[in-house]
Image (cartoon, rainbow, N blue to C red; front, side, top):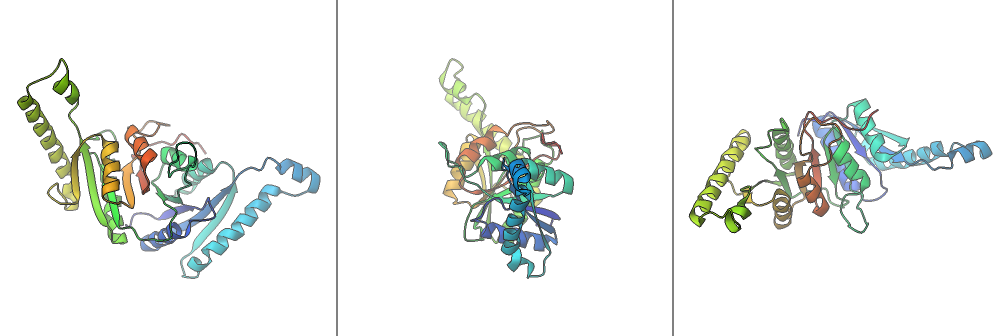
Length: 310
């Protein structure tokens, strides 16, 4: 996985960080990359009062306190001889992270999921979702866990996504060496469907079953050829047990595969189209994220422009 040179680890929680942090350190060492560990303290709303009443910069003291905690957290890793930088800023977390990426050229953001405990409880919290939508570089959101080992990694691809440039190759370029580094099994999935099948099967547009079956076979073969063309660069094809060409809606297929294969990480694109500033997250990614209980490495097209400005 030798492609990252400037990694940002977002330590925006006080527990559940250790496994993801060890992974970030390992990836940085493998890539001989610079690693920065960052946290964001929120504006207290009392800063002016404390400054005027007591001459105290409360925000600065909060940053200093958190920086001491980060330095203590990083102690065992810096002793290993790899330079790690720590920083704490004040502001809105996702904005500060995106702006740090824009200013400093980070090429990977790693963080631990916040876990949204609202009415629709999901693994990913508000900051996570903002970064998945708006951060210009890949975002790797890990689960809070005590073990660092991944057993199974899934690359979710669409060989017919011709609007996102090199996105599909990028997904596989990340997933393949990552699985090797983790000594994990790599699974690849692509979902296909026949548009209008329900109309052709059940309504006024119904056609004979044998003709519908032929259309389905042709459609599946079309997707098989497209997937094989994409996978040919990685010594993979649809004849391999770890390559899944599945009929169905992409979000359902990915979620089902995640459950059946007991996945630890999904690598996938998160945007429906490329090159449009501020575009919301794609429908497939949105549906997958609402159900996901696995770690996620989210990739955006090279033409993506973040709606967050410096």
